[in-house]
Image (cartoon, rainbow, N blue to C red; front, top):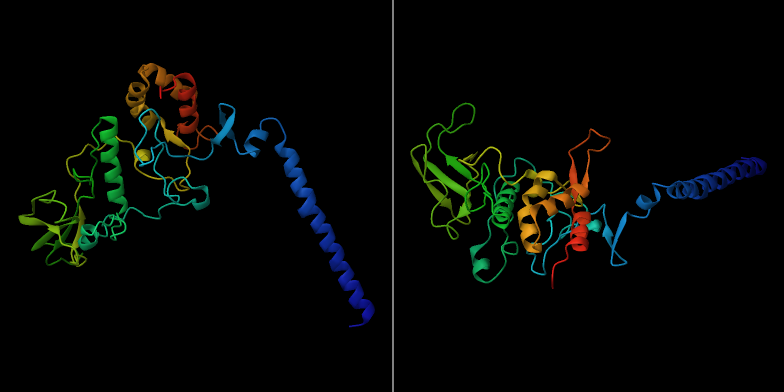
Length: 307
């Protein structure tokens, strides 16, 4: 290549670099910044920060927990939905649990480590999605004074799942059970399984270290109502783990507790719910929700709790 051609090619490349830098590195960011200053958009562009007593407290776009130092729900506040983002609502760890409908068998904890004082998680316990839902439902039922039972859950708050062992038909279904185990209930933590008999065979609780994967995994529906008192968003995390809203059904479930804790009427709490209710996105996407942070700030402003 001649030297003059070399210069022309590189001069063209340099000009393209300068032009694109001006457009994408300066012009476009400046345009977006100017658009963000328009009325109605500026608050969103600044993070939708809410204030209390003259100080910024949080963004209304990111949920948070309303618990004490031990993780117990504070009764005077609406509670958010569960979160799988870090330790809960961590914007730097936005994520889902990645557990799906087939996650119904727990990984048990090592009883030796439990006896040594380890926490269940440190002892290897990994609850399935089903057991997480069941445990949360029981806990919320106790907190709100309602029936926390739901289909496919035991009364103790774990997934009601059996491993049925025996000869199978051509479809892989066990036809004559010879051994049945309640896989999510280790013998160390329960005196008897949630179901005593399955198709004429006595049900045993699981023993740590035993492999029950050879059996057919059978979830048991149980006698719980098809429409549980505890709604789905109260026991499942959002995809981002940062959802700031709860359903109106979950908000209504918490009215009596919040009213009692603040010594106000249920109608006063319901008025706060209405003030902070949001409609469907674009008028037709999703379901109406209640912004938990805004509702709790309004409760503190209108009906403060004595310290």
